[in-house]
Length: 153
Image (tube, rainbow, N blue to C red):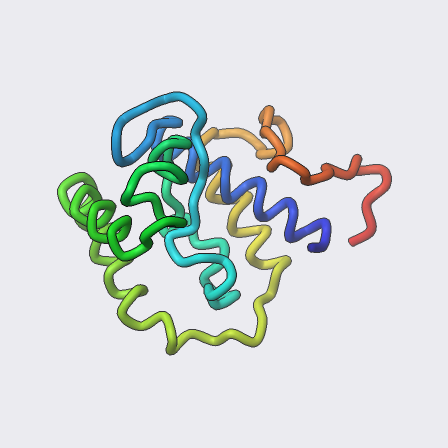
């Protein structure tokens, strides 16, 4: 993963987490929050990889351990998750539903990562009213954040 992809991942996760106020969208827990890609990264077209509407805020139990956890039974997870989202945010529900129905029609060849990065920074700044670099963003476990002075873009 390149530096700019790492940065997009960090910002994407922060925007999803902040959108949900660091609260599990299924059970309401505030502890041990994970950010989940509704469409698994392994099968997600690159053009959808950083769409924040396709991110879910889940606690560790709902993400990995319950019988409806996405990595145990994704169909059960989607059924439960979409039922909650339909009530909570119908516009987002409709968007996710259309994407899931048409996911195979999206371009899988590549994206303009610099444009994605710029759009994510704008989305983040709209939430925080400040530059994303000024925020205390928690890195993804195992991800190295390269100091700006050492970056190659």
